[in-house]
Image 1: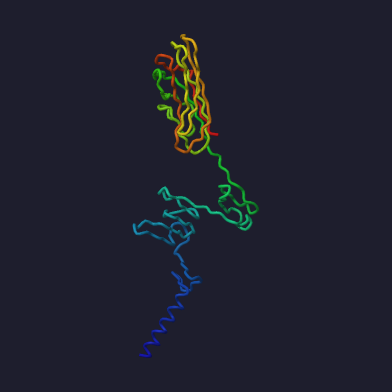
Image 2 (image 1 turned 135 degrees about the horizontal axis):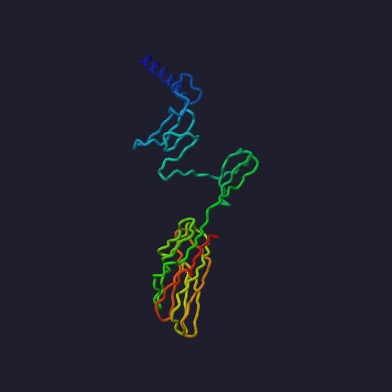
Length: 267
């Protein structure tokens, strides 16, 4: 029994000593875990990790390229897995630019901006974001504006819309991001009868604010009527801004082609 116990202790001791360094494809590991791969190019793979669905979640190629969610990568770190979750989280740091070395990136929670180290200073990164710019006019005059009725101005002809945020058919603008937007609209009715003490009102309507502009008429007559309105609106992403007409001039009206214009600018 004593001999068996000593034999077991010897085997256990050897196992502990050998377990201090584990080598794969090497008998002399220099690290706690050392793997010697079989190649040195992108054609062969050094390490792979898969989940229970047999999807590869990590791939290290033999030339040093690491892919997360992507099998073959030609760059040092690749997260482009086409799964709509390839996001890198950048954290903050108290290191100086020289400590972090040139090319390091950090996020500042105070200024809410990214900074890049040039080995001397942390330089704030800025982006030239394409801002909203919409220009439209009316050439389709089939829409009717009934007396004492609020009606959205529709059927615009879009001449410029950099971000595709304006619907020509509905006349509605959708904010692509949270910010301040300036809108200016001029609406002109074709010549027709105008009742005494009546008005033409153009409303610029957002979820939180409505700007109202009026043209008033004291005497009854037959002529062309027009109203101009503009305003600044603070919109959240996805909120809608639209022009709406209301009048009480006594009869249905139609817009005059070439005399109605809209512009929207992101500040």
